[in-house]
Length: 213
Ligand SMILES: Nc1ncnc2c1ncn2[C@@H]1O[C@H](COP(=O)(O)OP(=O)(O)OP(=O)(O)O)[C@@H](O)[C@H]1O
Ligand SMILES: [Mg+2]
Image (cartoon, rainbow, N blue to C red; front, side, top):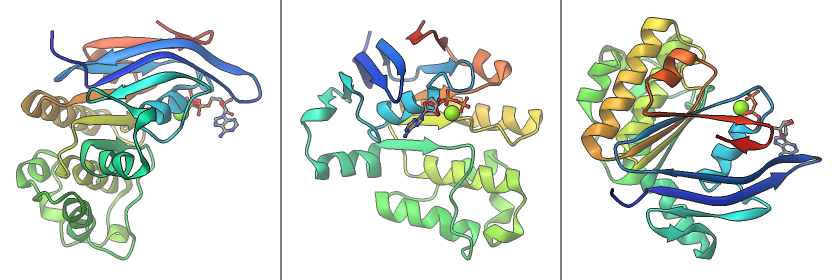
């Protein structure tokens, strides 16, 4: 067994009421894990905790072998910039820019090159000169996924990444994500309501009754 890329221990969090308690989760290189559960069960909150954007009331998160909560802001900023890839259901592309410029911003920030094979696999390579506003919703979604992958993250957190896509395009996106982690030794944590997408992951966890099992 290799060292986990992410290890979360004893995570508990409450907003107005307790959301979850004593959650344990870990994921190793090349592994994929789906997190499913009812709307409001806390899946997105858990993903925010795993990906450095929220601190839980209790518990610890270790990313790439280092305890998250003992690192300074600059180190966390570097993790976000170079090592963590986040894909949301609703993408955040710059509207006035072309697809290529949108991807270029991410690769410039992370000092990586744009990967044409990823653009081809996502079937968006011919759209690179189009402005965001000239792309369909699903095309925009795939550009934002290419943008995340082009920075070569070591772990990907995806929150309903295929929610707006037809089945065929959703399968294409899953192919690309799974190929990416296999080829690079990264890991994928996928939150989804789509059973078909969850079934393509190595493990499926359910967040229910404040517990992840
Ligand atoms: N910043 C916040 N402040 C207060 N309550 C919050 C906050 N963020 C989320 N919540 C509440 O926590 C609960 C879980 O929210 P979360 O977004 O994690 O659920 P989810 O499982 O991702 O749901 P969905 O499947 O609908 O996306 C919800 O009841 C939500 O209203
Ligand atoms: Mg959610």
